[in-house]
Image 1 (spheres, rainbow, N blue to C red):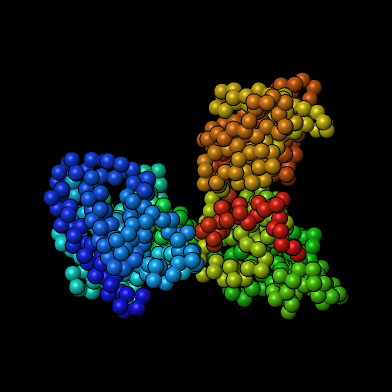
Image 2: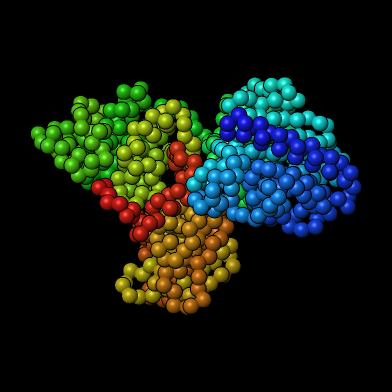
Length: 617
């Protein structure tokens, strides 16, 4: 906005705040004013006092000589001005190219008419109005980044916050700065959590004090003025609640993001919501994010290297990674077979040609290996995987390499996978990002994701699986007869080609192909999937991972083979039970992308799980 437009928008905002305040005063403290009269456009109940406030806003903007868009919780999205009122869908309206300049609004008002309605009805002095003003963009949806003016007024005590993008924020005309408190144990935390969120409980338990005033608008503004050290809303705040106070907080110098520490760029629509985490400074904010994401990041002192050994691409890249880590002062151990391969490659008289051919085959790694010099004594760094005690294990390969490697580890070493296979659902990155991401990890910019595992018991022997266990006949075209129990209760008896018991991690593997659901790895459950059952009504089950699953073969004379993660095969006879339960210790993955799972689902589960773009690896 230019200076004149800001003045116009500010005058309108002042008028709205003044007249809404005057309109609701007679209704404060009267229970009948809080009665729900309808459901608002945002899907929440609307009280009589809310309608009074919103009607006043619509009247002011409708009678203005300037055209404006309005987003408000009760009426939704409107186009107002010059005596007219029109219902619109804002995202579609902003994309229109057929409007003349003089008929195109310059402003978007995002208003919560009464934030803290319940407080107002009960005369608790924490209720007010939030007015944000954004410049209406052309040809694209508006976002929180477009908000240039923010106003918040507490009607109960007269406190008035305002902010101008790039110029600062003020409380009752005095410039504001947030708290410098950097210790969670000393902070005053405001906001809303969920009872089932363990990380939030940990945060609340460690805070000095917790405030819940029932007004997102005011409480976010209190972070800007230093009255709160931090604020969070894990239920999800509506954009209309935070549009003004977000600008106020940022202009004061505070930090506001989602729960993953990412800036808020949400669209300005009536339906948009986001989890909010705000703090007075970056250090406190970072600690809060770490707790909410269960981050166990620690200093990486030693790294174990494991790789496919059947192609020179993985072997060459592993050599470069070893060189990089040693140059950065990190101790390295190398899986024994890989060490032997590297020694053999180092002595190969055709080394330069091998590297050249590898680059042609895989241009993504050209910059990484073009100057590769194999000068390290790899034998001295060699160890069997079972003896690894590293802070991190880097695995180069596809999901098969990763599954095989983790099954051999005696300790729960955090795994970092580099995709050298086809799909690479469990791996963290593609090969071209290797050293940029490793640099972040060595600086501590990562988090630990925990995945559950299955313990499989059969005839006094125990096995484990990260993805799934498949039970099938060892004779082609023959069916097996199964009885499946959960915690001793028979849930199904059926004939089928086989049976899969899968973890959430395995839900995107064989389980999915057999018709099972995709399950978020954070879900505490296991999936039971019959493979081609004879009975029509047999369908997959999702059961608690606190349960014990038991599978028994009922057909005499038929053996079954059960396979853990495609790696270990064992046989089961008639009437023998195979039992499944959650392992005491799961698998840890090093992650750098906070949106790991659903991003992977969209990226990897394209046609056949392979991108439509040509792939060299």
